[in-house]
Amino acid sequence: MSTGTLIAIIVAVVVVLLVCALVAWQVARRRHLKTQFGPEYERLVEEKQSRPAAEHELREREQRHDALEIKPLSAADREKYAQGWSQAQERFVDHPDDAVHEADRLVTALMSERGYPTKGFEQQARDLSVEHGRTLQSYRTAHEVSDRSSRHQATTEELRGAMVHYRALFDELLHNGGRPRE
Image (cartoon, rainbow, N blue to C red; front, top):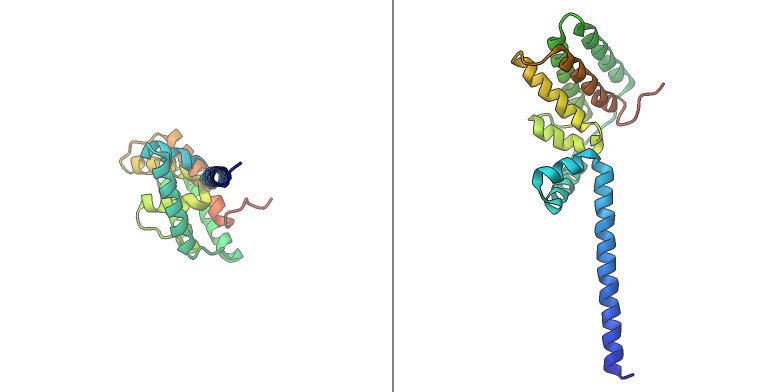
């Protein structure tokens, strides 16, 4: 075998290995984003109608989130918010619209207390998606019902569902991203 042929084979093998490594890296990155963002990954792919565009935005969200100073709550703050939530739930029986608006306010206040920016719902959702991708659709649904409730266009059953949806995110935020302790 000539030296030229041997060099060509070596170059071809190196190129194939580099392509395989690049594909493996992209697959791992995609798997990471799907795991990290949960249902938000597929929602954004559908919205953007482009997997690369969606993945680019999700990486940007991760970078923005990394720059935030998200902090855990103290036990006293957790108790204060838990009491506020209990009061909102009690209010639901007689004033479901007010209770849902209070739940929205509590979630926003809790986000702020933890260090999340709270200007504009869509930015809130983008910031939350990094650590709370699994409950983000619940938050979006609850917020939409709350908006319709402001215009007196939500049914009591929708308001009840909104309280359940708000509670899912509220619990994650209240317990610093973890599950509540039994």
